[in-house]
Length: 207
Image (cartoon, rainbow, N blue to C red; front, side, top):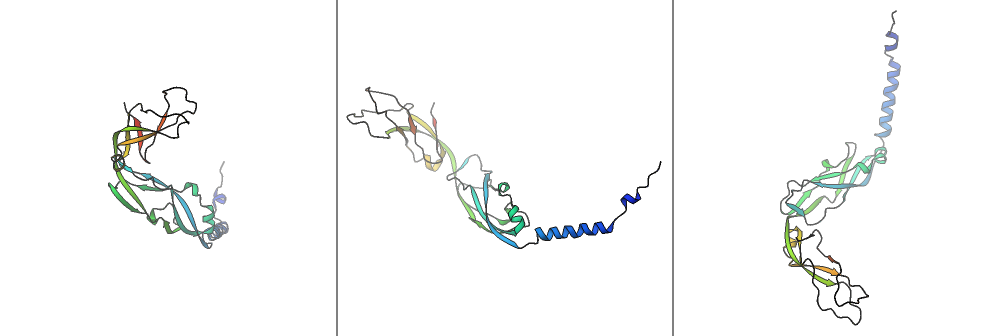
């Protein structure tokens, strides 16, 4: 038995013309519409910082970008999928100013980047260092009336600080806040204290 398949594959120029017109109409309706401008918050991700370095200040969570694009695409822009990755592989110790470039922004070619805020990011890069320092206990609150403090000592007597060298090199000791109970009935007691460190510095118990 033979089948003639030619009628099924015969080119229908009328259908093709309708398809072309429909595609052109859709393109004009979505892309060709009047363009609008908007500020968009783009999350910032940091990568590539060498292990021996540390940032003295935390980078911002996001940058703001003013973009222009078709109104339809602007409404459909999924801001949750936007992310700008900043590579810090080439930074050096000290102050580093990195310019943010429009061509690196995570937008398609249908959008035009008009402005970036901030236009550049300043980073102070320091060496990651460790140092052992003494703990200095201090009272957080005044003692109950009628009581006098004889002496306080901490156990352990010291901690190891880890953080930017320019910060921990200036710390001969760290304070530890002591909270005394209000119903003191003994001449001596033990209580927990919280070590206070500058921002970006961590305290680790010394063995």
